[in-house]
Length: 131
Length: 135
Image (cartoon, rainbow over all chains, first blue to last red; front, side):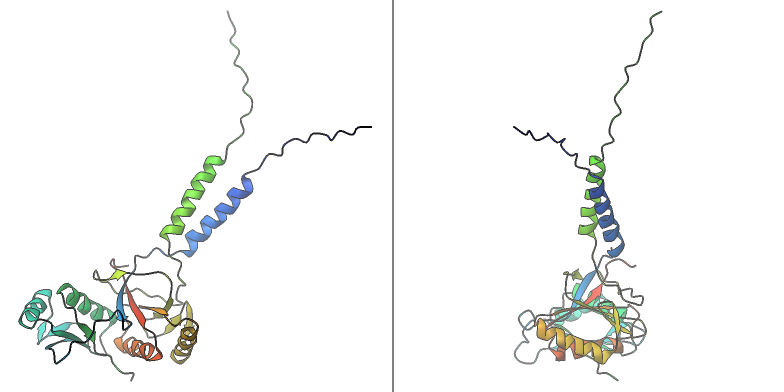
C-alpha cells in the first residue's frame, strides 16, 4: 500500500509581530536617547598628545578670571584683539589662566574659548586645591 | 437602458510592508542621531562655547551639579567613593576616557580640584563637556 503524504498549504508569513517588535525598539530609542549637541574641551591630555614644554624660560601671559566670571589680561577685560596683540609682542608665550575659586565653569570656558580663538597654543589652567 | 454592473473586486489584503519600511527607517534614524547617555539625577546644563571639539562616544561621565553634587554615569556618588571607583575602573581599563559634564554655574572650586584628583589618580584623558548652542 502506498501512503501519500497530504500536501500542506504553505503557511503565510505574518508580518505583524515584526512590526510590533520594531515599534517597541523605535519607542525605546526615542525615549532613551538624548539629542543635545555636545562638544568637549580637553582638560587633561596624555603625555603623547600634550605639547612638550619648551626648554628655557618662556614669556608668560596671565589671564585672571574674577569671582564674577570676567576674564582680565593685564588689568584690562580680555578680548580676542587684546590677546592677539599681546601674543604678537611675545610669540610662543605660555598663556596661564588663573581662575578665582568663586567664578563659575562658564567663566573658565569663555576664557579658554577667547584664548583658543586668539591662537594661543600653549594654554594652561592653574589648578585650585581643594578647600 | 443598459445596466452597468461594477465588477466586484476581491477584498484586498492590507499590506503592512510599507509600514515596516517606514518604522525601520525611523528606527535607524533615531539610533544614529541619538546619543545614549545615563542622565544625571540632577539638572546639568553645560557651558556654552563655540571653540569645542567634537565629543567622542564612550568613556565614563562625571556630572557636576550647580551645588557641587557629583554623579558617576547617572548615579549620585560622594567624592571619595567616586575617586575609588575611578581607580577601580583604571585598573580594568588603563586608557580610561573621562567626560566631566559640569553645570555652567557650578563653582570652579567644585571642578578644578576634581580634575587634579583625577589626574593624580592616573586618568590621562579628561575632557569638559560644552555645547555650541545654549540649551
